[in-house]
Image (cartoon, rainbow, N blue to C red; front, side, top):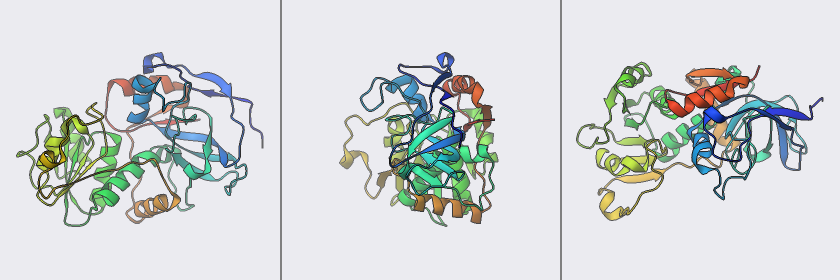
Length: 325
């Protein structure tokens, strides 16, 4: 096992727009008890990382200097004292990754064993597909099936669907043969939602109540900014799952549950910080049973990570995946 002493990474200690991001050389982390060293082969870019770079640096829950990146796919380089094996394909996400400790914007990452999930041998996806998978599909899966309890016969509305998570949610729901309505605030994106499988694509100007009707389950990726309107949009007896924060508002002000949640409507939310192998095994099995492969919009080589971050800062349009040569 030959592990270099240094690696290329993007490490930040201040607010860092993509246009200012730079790769640098830092030490390869040393293995410690309960952690394994993973050679990263691919990782997706996520809105949560953009918030770390642009807004959250300096907050107490972010390390003073950190390599961002909340998910990755790769190969176990050094399993340390864990039950993993060198050379094993794995994915990892969340649990403080890229916030409390260094994440995936690097060639190697030292990750707690509890955050590392084995990839079954039957999964023949490319590294780009695996890189697009962990956080996005875990969140879509948990939101749809744990929180919304989605089942055949439901009508699902995905609010804010033209992001990686939105496309994944549409894909999973359509595999279950659920009727899907999907929204975007850009007219130019409506056809993309139809191509992704949405039965109905809706232009969202911030007011859906009374305009988008028939959904008994709503996955709200816009978040607190429009949540009151979402609660008035779902059918009586329906469930709203608030998962995303694309609207740029992170908490509700003066929220009165008695007045703001209509009678007979249920509100929940999905927090993906505690992944388990059991969850991923179920998700891998579902993807395999329905002949699904993870979706992504475009890829960049790791050496072009700063350019990818600059693109992420200025546009949305699906998942961006970074792939190592």
